[in-house]
Length: 147
Image (tube, rainbow, N blue to C red; front, side):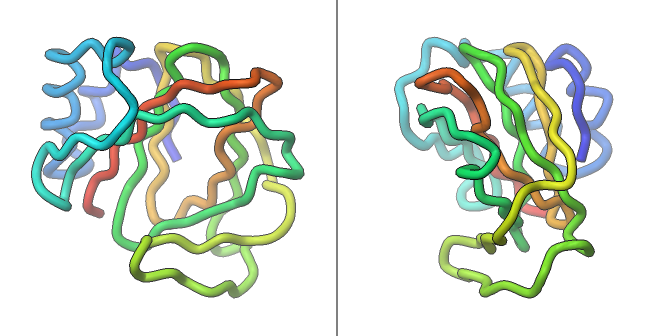
């Protein structure tokens, strides 16, 4: 897991061959002005989801992992707390290959709060529980990058 400000995202471009395209997209796009939905950047290897989620309590936020994709999550309108647990500490659970997701029971090991203007990168080994917030609505961007 990596947490930083959007201005520093370029520092991590060498971690994945598709990360430079994420940086370029952000530099040329007003993320706040986009309508909810999915935008293909490079087929199924790189796309972005603009969505609005309901704020959850830590107990309601489910821990998840992805086998094939890396998440770059950016809250846009309110602070968002995200839970984190290393995948190696999570119990065995059923993987949904079609949706590239595994959900796990229980609370995350630790929590961190991101403010608008910050991002979190979750790699396949990072269990994460997004959308923890007292806000009724979290407007956010999630880049899905082939691992």
